[in-house]
Length: 300
Image 1 (cartoon, one colour):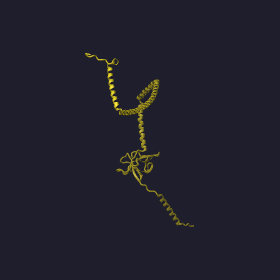
Image 2 (cartoon, one colour):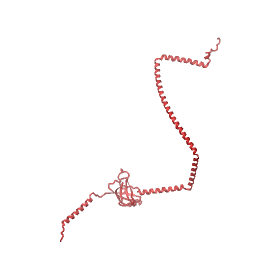
Image 3 (cartoon, helix red, strand yellow):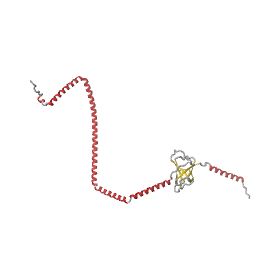
Image 4 (cartoon, rainbow, N blue to C red):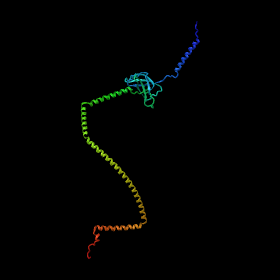
């Protein structure tokens, strides 16, 4: 029995399969665009152990590119050239700094970027450099190494000072100092009773001072009240003097001639009394015997 092949059906199946493959390829390619990268250069003077090409480049924790190449600087063998491929449009500014960061315990390094001033201008290529150069800082490992080295140095200096302090000469000096302190403590213990009495006298003096302060406070209040009363009296006296002046002016205006005559008579009376007083001062007997006659002149 011969089988008949339906070529039309086979052809349709092949066309359908091809169309499906083409549609799948188109669907996978939709939305995918080739990324454009900008190249930046780093110079490291520290070890870049653990850093490999294709290692991640992160800006504030976000992956923005990868390491392109790593090589020694032929002109300066003490530094390493690392070129970065960073996505176009990433804000690489003049204040951007790059450091090596180790990922966990694996030892795989990545490049971390940080921006010190977000208002700084974009980083530009300088001089004969083929790419813009991002300044680098010490890695965490390098900072830890420096810190440990400094701590070890400080510890060594401290050990040397302790050794010097605990030398034979210093031990004798410390022993003498402790002996003097012991003697001083014993002397203070012997003087404890006297110190207790002094403290009691001091407390009594402080109590007396507090009582005196209270009395002074009371006296100050009395003085303040007296001053207020004196002020009131002075104001009253001032008003009385003003009233007396007004009355005196009125009296002077109404009885001016009589007052003038009275003052003249009073002045003459005062002069007479003054002369009498002078004579009594020269001869007090005149008060008992009267005025003595003078010696008789010739022919009397």
